[in-house]
Image 1: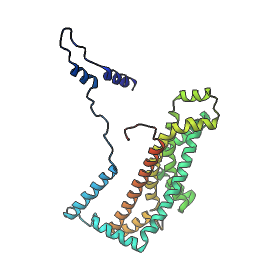
Image 2: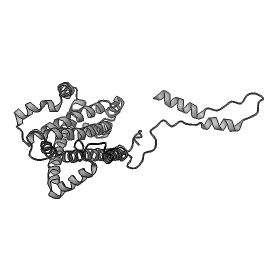
Image 3: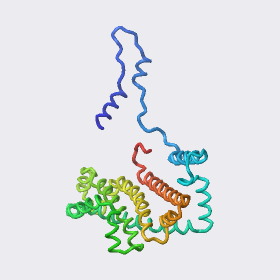
Image 4: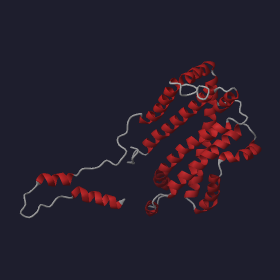
Length: 294
């Protein structure tokens, strides 16, 4: 990185030396000193540009259904799905199930984020904490939370506690891995500077640890939000009596593909919206950074 910066400074100041006795070409000198830069970044961001991909996907789906290339028995058309969603809203069935799903995902996300951050701080700021916590958590990382379902059902039953726990486990691992990696990646010179200034532990965490670990925290939060929705899909199909997953499972019994797609669209919308919300908070909290994301 430093080599690239040095080359950039050299290129900016480079000029053409005129030949002895030759004509002085001031235009050529100015042109070389200014230089022509090739754009290597992703380009300027467009407002709501992330909606282009989903919009094109829906248009392709609509075109395939309208042209008859898509069998409605396999995948219902967008018009049918919209009509079904309207019926579910009119009866209140969709709202009730959505609220239950949001509650489960929200609780799992809250407990998972809290546990993951606490564990990351304990392991990242203490050798003893690292030796005690990092090994078991790396082992848990290799074991999918869904693989622990039989054991969790045995311990916690099949109620809400088990469902929230499954979601929280997946979120906590993502939060721990990314926050811990970002925290331990803080330049040691900042730690030495804090020691030289004789900062206490609280000030050190506020001034050094928190700003240094925020990028990893937000990466873990985005993955955690996605993990909460993935876990929710599974746990809502295990002896549930409410929720979007339960609604989809019931629709499967009666081959109602339109209801299933309504549930999938609801999951997709919530996942996309929650990720966009985290991105917005991240841009505000890390406004001091200059990155390719803009």
